[in-house]
Structures are given as C-alpha cells and as structure tokens.
Image (cartoon, rainbow, N blue to C red; front, side):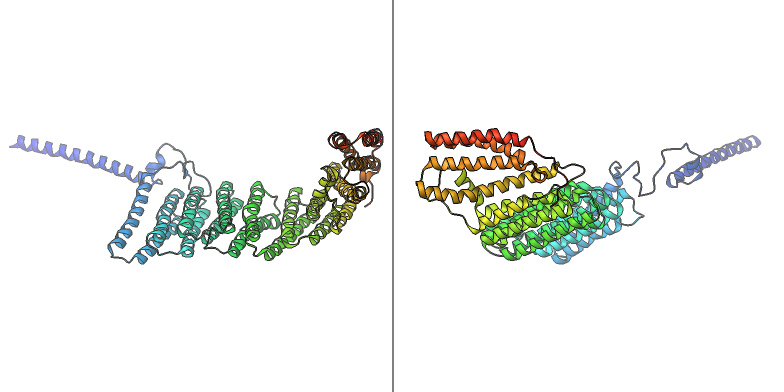
Amino acid sequence: MSESSQAVGTDVEELAERLSRMEARVAELEAWRASLRNPLSPVHQAAPPQRPAVDDDSVEPEVSEASGFDLALVGRTLIVLGGAFMLRAASDSGAVPIVAGVALGLAYAAAFALFAMREQVSRVSASFHGYASLLVAFPLIWEATKKFGIFGPWSAALALAGISALIVALSWRRRLNGVAWGLNLFALALAPLMMLFTVAAAPFIVYLLALGITTLWMGYELDWHLLRWPVALELDVAMFAVAFLVATNRNGTMTPAAAIGLGFGVFAVYLVAFALRTVARQRDIVPFEIVQAIGAYLACLGAAVWVARSRDIGGTPLALATLAFAVGCYALSFAFLSRRSSTINFSFYSTLALVLTLTAGSLLVHGVASSALWSLLAVAACWAAARYLKTSLAFHAGVFIVAGFVASDLLTLGLRTLFLPPPSPWPSGSGASLLVMVACLYVAWLRPIEHEGSYEPWSWAKLILLVEGGWAVATVAMLGIGLLVSTAAGEDAGSIAVVRTALLSLLTIGAAWASRYERFSPGRWVASGMIVVLIMKLIWDDFRNGRASTLFISLAIVGIALIVAPRLGRKASVPGGAEF
C-alpha cells in the first residue's frame, strides 16, 4: 500500500508540475495576445523596433490612403452597401413608402460622410466611408429621378448639390484627394445623363458651375490643381451645346433669355473668382485661369451672343453687362499697374477688357455710331498708353482701328480702290471713313515708350499704327482721286493703275522720310514693305491693265521710289526722348 501511495503521490506531483508549466505557457500566450492589442504594453516595448507608425493626419503616413489595403475596411464598405440594398428591398416590398425610402437612403449616405469627418476616424477609413457615401447617394438620386419620378430637374440638382457639399467638406477637412476625384467622376458622369433624361439643362449647369468653382478653390487652397480642369471642360461643352440648341430653335424647354443669362452668368462667376484671387491675394494669373477665361468666353459668353443675334433678343442688356465687365477689367488692370504688380496680370485683364469691349460694341452700336465708338476708343487707348507708359494699350488702339475699318468699310474700300479691278461705279467716301482716318492720324503720332530698357515692343505697336494710318490715308485719297479720274477718263484701268502706283509710291517715300524722326522711326520698315508691295502691284496691275504710255509713267514712278526710299531709310532715327 505504501508503494502504491508513493506512486500516486509521484503522479500527482508530475501532473501538478505539468499544469504549472501549462499555466505559465497560457500566461505567456495571453501576454503576447495583449501586446498585439495594446502597442504600449511592456511586451511590445521589449520587442525589436519596427517601422514607426505615423499618427498625425497632417503628415502623410508611409502606409497611406493610396497604398493601404485593408480587407476589413472593404468588408465594412460592403456592409454599408448591403444596408442600402436593405432599404431598397423595404421600399420595393411596400414596407416603407418610396419617398421615405429615398429620404432614408440619402440620410444613410450622408451619415457615413459625417461620421468620416471625425478626427478619431483614420484617413484610410474615412476614404472608404466617403466612397461608400458616393456609391449609395448618386445611383439613388438617378433612380429616384428616372424610375420613381420623385425628383424633378431642380430638386435632383439640389440633391446632388447637397451630397456633393458633404463630400467636399469631408475631402477638404481630411485632405482626401481620392474622395474628391471620386466625386468628380460621379458628378461628371451623372450631370449629362440628368440633362438628357429630364430635358432640362439649366439646373445641372448651375450644379456643374458650383462644382467648378469649388474645385477651383480646392486648387487654390489645397494645391489639387487637376480637379478643376475636367469640370470646367464639361461645363463649357454643356453650355455651348445648350446655346446651339436654343440658337437653332431646337430646344423648347429653355427660353433664349434664360440661355443668354445662363451663358453670361457662367462666364461672370468664373471671372469674379479669378479676380478675387488675383486682387485679394495679389497672386499672378495661372495657366488654368487663362485657358478657362478663353473657354468660358467662347463657349459661354460667345454662346450667349450667338443666341442674342440668332433669336434677336436680349442684345442690349447683354451688351451693357459685358461692357460693365470690360470697364471692370480695365479698372483691375490699372489697379495692378498702380500696385506695381507683375506684367502678366496687367496683360491678362487689359486684353480681356479689350475683347469684352469689342463684344459689347458689336452688339450695342452699328453704322456711323460704331465707327465713332471705335475711333474714340482708339484715341483713348493711345492716350492711356502714353500717359501710363503701357505699350500693350498701343496694341489695343490698333485693334480698335481695325474694328473701325470694318465698321466704316475702309477695309473693303481699300481693297477695291487700291488693288482689285476698278469698281463701277466708283465708290464715294463717307463721314465714317473720314472719322476713322482722323483717328488713325492721331494714334500714329504716339511718342516712343520704353519698356524694360527697350523700345522694341513700342516699335512693333507703332509699325501697326503706321500701316493702319497709311491704309486709311491711301483709301480716302484714292476714293477722291479715283472719282475724278473715272469721271474724266471713263473707266480706264490703265489710268487708274498709274494713279494707284503714284499714290503708293508717295506713301513709300513719305514713310522713309518720316523715319528720320524718333516717333516715326518704324517708318523705315513700312517703306521696306511698301517697296515689295509696289513691285508686286506693278506686275499684277500695271502690266496687265496698262498701255505703253501708262507703263512708262508707272515704271518711272516706281523707279524713283526704289532709289529715294532706301536712301532716306538709312537716315532713320533711334526712338527715345520725344514728347507726345
């Protein structure tokens, strides 16, 4: 018995020892498991140092939103989508009214976006919540509009704007560029579908405009520069398509007045946004602003002008509004000038002001009044160029003179009387032609303007003004002389050719002679170009239409011009120091 008792005691001791070892092992396993859950535990601190974790959301973690792929987050997203389908099933079965189901679905999507804004939620998790909100809300709005007819055009656009505002707030607050791009893709895909289905473009153009301005400021504030490009492009294309349908009377749901207001509004909102940044923050204009200003002018304001002209409605209000923006752009350009801002801002706003002025003037005045307007603006631009030492305004004066040529028919009259076969009957001049010619003579008197130590920009502007002045003088003179010649000699092409050659030769010699003076120094280039024109004109006109007697005179005149003009041109002055 004693031996058996000893054997039992030995077995018990062995079992106790084994149980103690098992308990110790379990304790070690529990401690290891706890270390996995709590990184601050002693076990975890004793472990070899691993890659440091980044907890600050303001710093991009090494395992970022783009590189981190967590199946658990994918699973949560699927559960979120499952909840949305559960609401859909309840609505389909009649347990929940359709309207209530749609409202609950939108609230469901909004709740996850709001939840993701909390700082306690990691950026990766917030991204998945944002994607889930997009996947629930946008298809729901489309189905509520198309299938159930709950939303009309404006209410659908309002619903899109509401959920988009939440996603924008989430993206902005948590710096989730991927979620912002997801919103862009959903919006750019759904907006045109809504326009086609509802046959109502205005609500969704307004929505795209709001999204465009939002992405614009995201680029300004967050340096997300690419977001704004696709929105602006789709907005411009949509506005142009709408204007085309209205202008061609193929869209019965939008009135011409609404199309005009919408087109001008899109252009105006973008322009105001650009001005706020460049003026309030004194920043230089960026490539996107230049490109979108051109795109919005052509596709939005240009489309509004197209509708106004084709439907003969709203031209005067549109012209006045455009003129107001032109004045504002000129004021901004001179405000930048007074602050000594960079040249690019002045050039951008002054050029935009020029284009807007031309647009407004073409809508507002016609005939002699149009010629008077362009002549007055050319003189004003030339005066401002000399007053503020801005060569770009001299180019503006040249553009206004061209507009005056078109309005007064000086362009076509010059071609007909100086180069084309003699017209029958010979045209007579008008007061508009004389008015534009006087403006040409005034702007041609512009004194030299130095720009960054160089007179080259002024020389090019002055060259344009001199050519325009020569064209105006030659045309008006030929209108009078040609009328006398045609009256005395009849419709004699040879005689007309001699008069043309003599007049152009005088202008060539006069330009070379005037180049001796500083303010007319680019006249030597005018004379060089006129020599080429004279030779081509001699071959094209005089040899074809002249007789032996007229050819003798023409050849002699051109020969004299070829001898005298180069000699005078060699005495050309260097610009600088003249007074206006």
